[in-house]
Length: 281
Image (cartoon, rainbow, N blue to C red):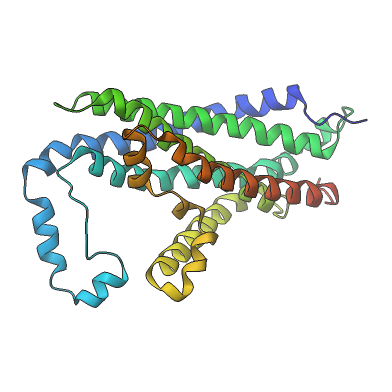
C-alpha cells in the first residue's frame, strides 16, 4: 500500500519555501509596522473627521451601499489595528494562493517530477506532503506577523497588551485558516496549469475575483450569497478581536471549521485531478 505522507518530500518542499516565506514576511511585516507606527499621528489629528467630511460630499444612499456611512473611530488602537491588519491579510491570501498555484506545476516545469517518481511513491502522497509543508510555512508566516503586531501593541501607552496577545493570536489563527483555503484553491489550480510561469497570474486572478465577489455580495443584499465565494470576507476582524478581548476566543472556531471543510474538499479534488494528469516532461 503506497504511503499517504512522505517526509523527504515534505522536508525538501519546506526548505524550498523558506526564502519565499522570509521575503513575504518582510513585505507584510513592513507594511504592518508602517501602518501601526502611524497610529499615534492619526490619533492625535482629526483624520477621522476629515475623512467623514470628504465622504459627506457623496449621496447618503451611495455611502450606505458601500458600507461607508458608519466608519470606525480610528483614534482607538484596536479599531485601527483591525483595519490595517485586514488590509495586510490580503497580502497573506495572495501569498498562500501563489504558493499553491506554483506547487505541483513547478515540479513538472523543472523536471523534478522525474526524480521523484524514481522513488516508490504515489501522486497523492506527493501532493499531500507538499501541501502540509506549505501549510506549515503559512503558520510560521502568521506567527511572525503576530509577533510584530504584539510588539507594536506593547509600545502603546495605557493599552492592555496582555489581553491583546490572546486576541491577536485568535485573529491570526483565523487568518491562517483562510489562507490555508486559498492554498487549497491554488493547489487545485496547479494541477490544471501547464507551466509555473502561469502561477502568479492565476493567484492574482483568484484573489481579485474573490475580492470583487465579496464587495458585490456585501453591497447588494440580493447577491449576498456571493460572500460565500470570497474566503477573504469570511473573517470579521473587528468582531474577532472584540470577542477575544472579552475572553471569548472560541468565536474563531466556526471560521476555522468552514475553511477546514472547504480546504479538504478542494484538496481531494486536486488529488483526483493530479492522479489522472499527464505530466509535461
